[in-house]
Amino acid sequence: MNSWGKRLIVTGVAVFALCAGGAALLMDKAGQFRAIEATGDVQCTAITGVVGAEDIVADLSRHQAFVSIDDRRALMAGNPVRGRIALLDLSAANPVPVDVTPPVPETFHPHGISLWTDPASGARTLFVVNHVEGGLNAIGISRVELFDVAADGKLSHKGGVIGAEMNSPNDVLAVGPEQFYASNDHGSRTTLGLMAENYLQLPRANVVYFDGKGFRPVADGIRFANGLGLSPDGSRLYLAETTGFAVRTYARDRDSGSLTLLSSTPVPNGADNIDMAPDGSLWVAGHPHLLDFVAHAADPAKLSPSEVLRLTPQGDGLNVETILTDPGHLISGASVATYAGPKRFLVGSVFEEKVLDCRGR
Image 1 (tube, one colour):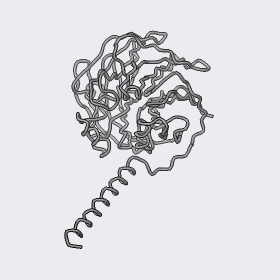
Image 2: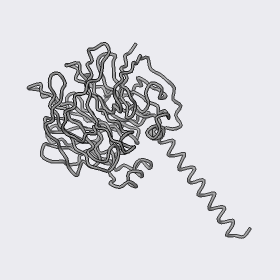
Image 3: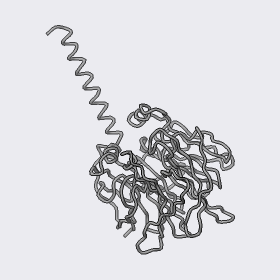
Image 4: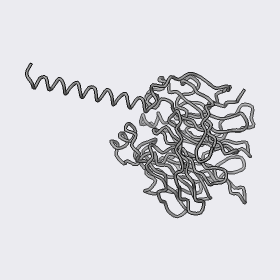
């Protein structure tokens, strides 16, 4: 064998080793090597009649929960079905989803949702991320829709907010009658850029703040900015960093809306949505195996493990407690765990045709 042949072999081996090492690193960072076993002292029943309950927000004083629903597999197949907001009566023995979506906007693909209650009047406004074009984690046009909420939970559209700064909104966090934060899960605006962010875990995502008049960025350098939560006193904002396997804590200036990073708490999964309990604890659903979630998105027969965490503020950081771990048999691709009362929480997912109603034993 001549020297060029030897060089080609050596180069080939080096490239193979580099690719294998890169693949192993990717799988490790995506949580793929973690063994998943069913844990959690809870009993869960399925609420059917929903498809793709990606986010859930509870109105505990009215014993209601709003569910953001969109059939994303139909959308990916080129057969989009109008999404909806469903209402659950938490006081019912067996809650049944009731469609409370108004006819406007006509194009409606809801993602993250947030409920604002006026402290003076008690009036409710539901904020909803609506992917008008593009869909989940795709390039397109999105808007935050605002809905008035009647006492019976029915919605009426009152307007929407759109802006170039909100290029890839995932979740919304209402902090006033018109003011909100939005997490942009990606910073890139090309398909190749989106893929690079996902698989190379590039910190290009950000959070923007809308003060009622305009947008401005308030946090950046984030690996897939996802769920948002606010402490009961409004002084702390929490952010799920999905591909970073972390939950960030920010100090929040209540007058200006500015954020200052205080800490980043590692979590054992790709954290998705954040729900705040009245005691200030965070309920977080996440994906222990991110690559399994990608496979599940393409094929419903492939299971994606789910996990529910309860995070308790501790100084500037968070204490992490596991409530439920499931290999994907109870529910695959869980995206939200919402506190629904003492020893009770609801679990939704990006693609499944159910919501879990779980109670501690």
